[in-house]
Every structure is written in structure tokens, then in C-alpha cells.
Length: 489
Image (cartoon, helix red, strand yellow):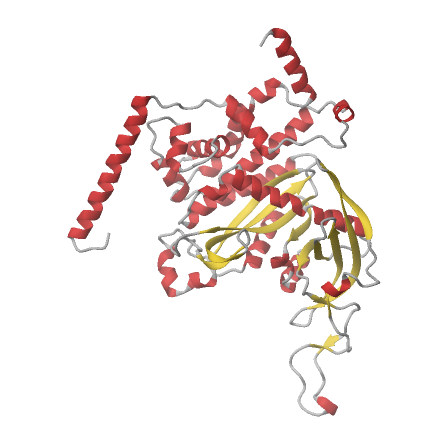
């Protein structure tokens, strides 16, 4: 390109908030992130932080096949075999919670990111057998059916078009605490004190951690698997937090506050006093599905947010309802009915103050979109589902490093927007209401251009293959020796 063409490209880059000097500095920005977090990857006896930078670069610049060997060759050099990376992720005792805690603390210090939204959701992946930590036949949301797989509970944070994963835990089904599975706990690095916890209990623990770490969120949200549990909603409310959870269309509510208590006696005043709380006022619950077309469900058009496809709207209705918990407690909540333009209907409940408007509830519910982006970016862009983690430690370590990759993208977008604002005239020239936001794919594309790549020569590639063949031969030899001693390989 001649000088005039370069000047024109530079001018356009600045108008779009992407000055070339900032793009060329993405590698240094990633290194700076690692410097801030490197202490998280040290154990009492070893400093494995350098491997964290290698792994982080591999997640962000590689397109596929992000296994240990390929990452090592791509980032370290052609002679690397990835064994140290495997030990770092699968066996090194560094604490994943340290990474999540620092991500939360950094979000809290970024101006404009306060009062965001916390969202609980689940991520499941198929597994071939039941010898991976937490693997069992269970419902995997991504597949929409019951299969053998691992399930993780994740906590995401979103605010103004930015999103990040801020905590994650692997779910261990109850069968993993029987005698047969307990024998695997030490081998798979399952923490000694770990006891069975439901997904709701794991979610509540993560919410409490975020609250303790000072993460500035305003609303906790989640899908039906959390919203359908009134005990979980009660426990979140007990933390003095506002929630908005989806509930199934079959959920039942009362349209006025019922009277709940222990019956004095049996029929006709005779018999023993009851022991279980009951609704004494004669009120009957109704399915929320029946309230969709109820005359008292008054709908209004709510403008949810501007998107690249136009203004997103929905028809929303909100009304006060009551839920009776099994032990006789009463939850007074908003029931939000959201009807999308596609005809999809969602039912949600919230303990927001009675003065909260239907419009605000509808916009809160719209924030659920961003947790979908967290999983989309983690899986399609950062290799979340490319690691087959047998060990508990490998799963949580990989999740923490994936979360750090997502935080690098979110922080880069946040800092670029503050330091290099876009030319406001672009919207008028392009005749749009909102300009498209930087995507994770966009940032990764620029990052790949500024980070050096390791390229194998024919001699080096052949040496790698020879080393691989030798390692496989040694593995075969070990199996033959085990067989000759009468042991199962």
C-alpha cells in the first residue's frame, strides 16, 4: 500500500475506535493481564504462572484442536510436547477460585460496570464413560435430553453489552458420594471436604461469594431450574438481594395472599390437630399458563434494547402473586409474562419492590441474552468444550482460564470504548441507531496478527512425529510388561 492508502486506513480505524497503535498493543495488553493474575497460579512449592500465559494465548489465538500438545507447539515452540501444560491444568494445586475472585474484584473497580446483572446457568458436555469427575446420566440442556455427561454450574456478569464468566463449579450428582464413587475421589482430585450439593446450593454459594467479594450487581437471574425452587428463591431473598427467575408454565401461584397455618382439628372439630401447614383461607392456586390470557393481565409494549437487527420489543404484563412454600412460608412476588414477537412466552417471578414498573422488569429479563453470549463465546471462541476433563481439578482450572480469556475480551472492549470513542457521525452516515459492537472473534483476529506464530520446518515436524511414535511405543511396552505380570493394563 502507498502512503495515501495507509493514511486512509488509519483514519477509518480511528473513526471506529480502533487506532492501529492500540491494535498493535494487544499482545502487550494480554501480557499485562497475565502479570496482574500471575500470583493466582503459584502453589506453595512451585510457580507455574508462565504456563498460564501459554495456555491463555492458546485459548485466544488458536482456532481448533486446542489440546496440550498443539498449544505447546503453537505457543512455546516445535520441540514442546505439552506434558508440562497437562500437569499444570490437571494436577497442579493452584486455586481456580483465586482467578474468579480477582476477576470479580477487577470488575468492581471499573467505572460504569457497577450495578450489573448476575445470571446462573448450566453447561453440560457428553462423556463416553462414568469415570470422569461428576459424569453420570443426567439432563444436558445443550442436547435437550438425558445422556452420560458432566455438568457445570456457572455464574455470569453482564452490564451494558459486556459480559464475563465470574465463577464456575462442577456438579457432582448424589451417586458420586456412594462407596463405589468415593474410591475415585482422591484419584480425580475431588476436594476431601466436598459433600453433595444440589445445583441450586452450588449457585447460592457462588452468589454469596460474589457478594462477599464486592461484585456490584443489582439483580440475580436464572432459568427455570433455579426459579422453580421456592426454597432457593427464599434463600436468595434472605441475602437481601433482588432476583428475577424464570419459572415453568405449569407453576402455580395465588392471586391474593392466602392464610396459611396448622389446622386446629379434623373435620367437624374432631380429631387430632394437624402437623403440616395448609392453606386455611380456601384460596386455590392457578397455573401461570392460565394467566397469559387472563383479562387482568394487562399487556404493554416494552422496548427492551437496540440491536443490530433493529429495536427489540416484547409484550409484557406484570401482576402481584403469592407462592406457598412446602413448609408454609409465603413469597409475595411479581409475575412477569413476556411474549416475544416470535410468539415465545416466558414466565418469571421477582421479589423486586412493589413500585417496580413492568418496563423495568421486562428489561431485566432481556439481560438473559448475555449469559447465552458467555457460553457461545466460551465454547465457539475460547475452547471451553475442547478439553475432555477427567479430573475435578482439570475441569475447574480450564473453566478459570476460559473465564480469564473472556475477561480479557470484555476488559479490552471496555477500555477501547473509553479511550478511543467512535465517531458519532458514523451512525448518521450508515443510517443505524447502534453501531455493531466488537465481538470476541474480532478481538481474537487482531490479536492473532500481533502475536508471533511458531512454524515447523519439515525437519522439525518429522522430529515431532518421531517423538510421538517413540512415546506410543513406550506406552505399548508398559502395557505388555503389565500383562506379563498378570495385571490388567
